Image (cartoon, rainbow, N blue to C red; front, side):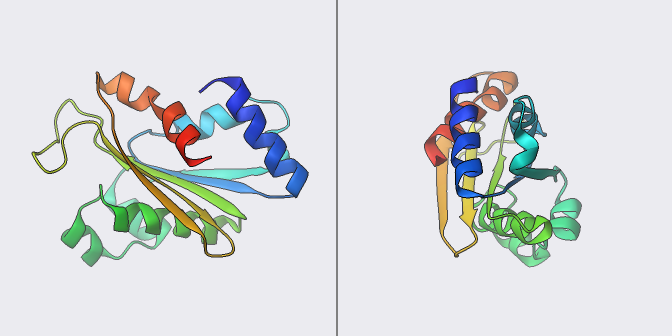
Length: 153
């Protein structure tokens, strides 16, 4: 993620007195790390939950185990609940959540490696969900976080 994008998000949040939190699965904290590299992030960035395991998704983000069984961890239902869960947990105005299959294993014909779902939720109930089909190595898919953030903002 380039600094210009992070700087723009930071300026938007600070000027509107908004706070932001993040729930990550497949990116393993890379998105939160990118936000916190920019000086001044403490004015808007509240924190992040890296819920890689389903158990943490359930315990920390309030995901219903039945939803995980029915839809799988990489689904619109789960990414929506991750976004809402981290927003509720942190009390942020907005939240970003990401789940996906970074590979090289774990994909299927229905959800191939590179399937990434991202959601941004707002305190007024707004919600945007995107499904991306990224390609490349595991590292390249995780590094696709810039595209994920750019699409949502």
